[in-house]
Image (cartoon, rainbow, N blue to C red; front, side, top):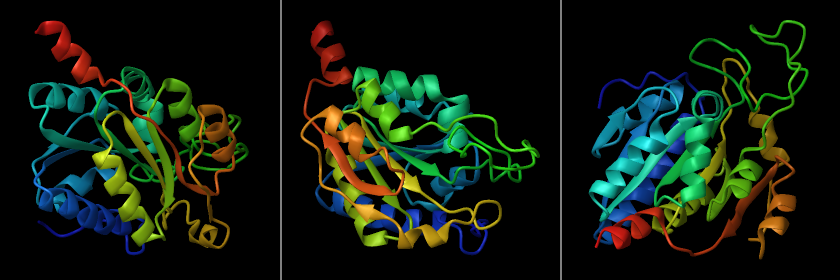
Length: 245
């Protein structure tokens, strides 16, 4: 592993440590794990993990992992994506992976900003935010990533805060073990362009919902964290392999 290039205080450090803990548990249970990451500050995480890893171009983490999982159904595959990478450039791939119930886990690093390119707004930036790309204020309404994934058919949807490393590691583990499309949004402060570490005082944790509609209500408040919804149903890979044989 080379020198870590994230800014001191970046939420990516906590995500890395939490994922190391979660993946170690999964590997000790006898599973093989592979990861992929996209373009952005988050993308360096695959360089810092001692696991088979792949960088892909903007927004293409879900389709790449879909192919990897189809080729080797015994792998547990995890993708890391940023809010810009996953919800601007790659939102269509994310939606279709959820709709198919592809057996992959996506961890979305949501810092509400294009940090690597020095502070432009993304699809999750709040309306009115002034930035390098919106000097008069962001005119757009933000996407609620968890609601989008629930509406798209994801069978495991959660949100965590980067300041809660122990809880984050547990949610990552649960997402990796879930059969079907798992989505975990991480509220991850960017100390350089969107430092919201103070949000730790407002974050609250909720119990899992019994229905998609209830989960939609629970995750509407962006300060709410927890596993909002989980269900078991046929995966995309199971359906493909059953149709072939």
